[in-house]
Length: 375
Image (tube, rainbow, N blue to C red; front, side, top):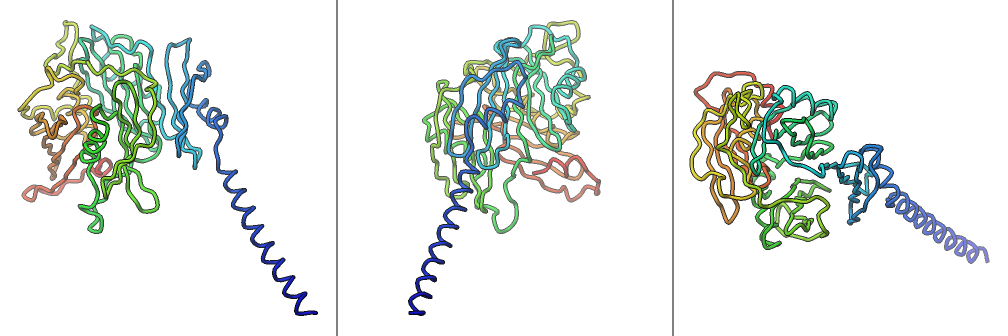
């Protein structure tokens, strides 16, 4: 009889353990599950108080929450990670996001505008470009907690559009164990564009989870946004989600890198390039130009992207070429004892290849900026 009771008690105890474990799992699942209301509440803190909720998109691992500020005529899109409940990215765009025909603000003044808008910026670079006949300042910046870019009207100082990403960008590993096994940014972009049958890459990020690397790619085609996951080792492309793009994208913008601003005229480069580190623009520019290629960044913008990464460098050479249907800027820069070979996607402005080599015959110099920005 006692054996039966003990056996019964053992079974009951085992069932109780199973029930406890199940309860813990269910409790954890429900605790971690994020609702739209929670996402809206979190996102609201990253937009002006006058902005109101418009719509949202829910994906497997994130919410995209859209707002519009009728008072300031500006739209916002806030991306929130469901698991961590942390804001990953904030995008903004004015309803009227056009530049100006004249340039009134200096690069220094534009830097002050952007630093005031996004407090905590520690590094910033500015470049003046021409888009569809109108001038815009393109600004790249970073802080200890975020990094991003913004377009500024050079006459009014209005921030036309901006993208802020929180955290630190994950870079392609260079250790011997992983070297050569990870797809480059360019290879991942090509895979996504091929899968979509065209379009342009709006955003790309390298991510890592459980030791596995993958690319998150946002691609826009015919004003529809496609979110792809590209396995960074196998190249497998998976469509995660698609929806109408909240922001309007003009694929017919004509970038003209030949327009330069001279004091007393109505547009172009303000002549303050030295202040933003553009002293490196003395290098040669060869090959194709962006004239006649719709939607491509200018050669000056490509240079500014490189100089934002290695301020004070000299651009030795840069040229535009077409590789498997994708326009890229290829070039070389030098700073101190190092030379850098780079490739930049001419549509998105994303650095897709970056190599750093020591110039052996030069003397050793300390390069704190280079160490800070090097990937």
